[in-house]
Length: 424
Image 1: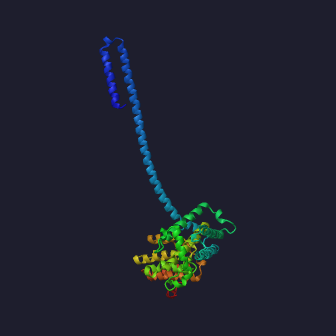
Image 2: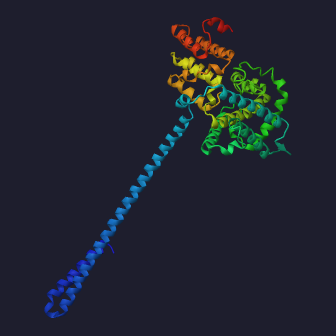
Image 3: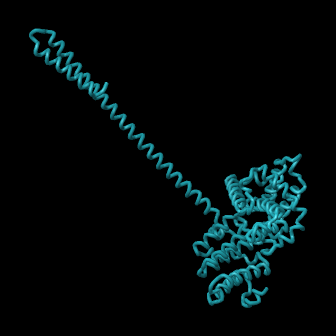
């Protein structure tokens, strides 16, 4: 019953009551009966109206509450999204160099460097093993990829890396902290995605697993035909042999890298199908490198810094932070950093950010002259000095001389005869 109907009913009852009062002499005792009935009806309608008002008020309160809850839910969703972004950024920053950790632990030691060398040796052997088995068709049977065989080889490879850091354990991966293991898997996935994004002329990221398997199987013929590629893919730039473990240590991989960088910049006409096949195989090797070093990082997060390429990158970024940069010098710095085979993509991002913000990554925190040969340190010094003279305004002034003295101290290299250093 609506509120208007209640008012009409109350009006009717009131009229009946008035009529009964006027005709009280004719009605006699019935007048009181009618009066009581009218009174009861009016009181009942009042009670009903009050109850309905309370229900309506409760309904309005409920609607307001629901609206408030919806608004709070939206706010919480928005806040959760913001927190999610913060956590993602925090997780990313957590992968950048932890200076406190470097200060607390003895990370630049011959013992840890020896473990790095074991990882490199195992990576070299496994990469050759996998590429050889690919070329021999060991991972295919009647034209179908035998994923289990491939996964078994990868499992043995990862187990071998873990064994380096836990030689007393029969199954070191099973004794690994689950959180660290999952973080390593996440880092591997992200870096492989980044690697595929950088593959030139090949849409690897858009292929499915069957297409990848077929392409790799076809490309495996390059392993036997590398001699035919040499006239086209003569490597024009090697960094330090042994340290550039993903490039300089294997001629096939070097060919692929050149195909994917220098020659592509000069024009795709010089890049034939074989060279692209070589590059595709080099991607396989680089994926193994990512898996190797991320597995090693579970047990030793500092291994990525015991690397001549990291030293060169840090020193280069520190160098450019000391001078005013123009467009050409900035491009040259980014180009140099992009060519480094760092053990973690996060380190490259860290160095990029330092260049963009024109700040130094503090090379004194990464001093490790004792872990590098004199020849290696000399090569780093010559490369940096050459970059300084070629790309930086003021590279031959007093400020540059001060930088050279400090560089020589950090690398334990004599920097007095700069001209002969450049000629060498």
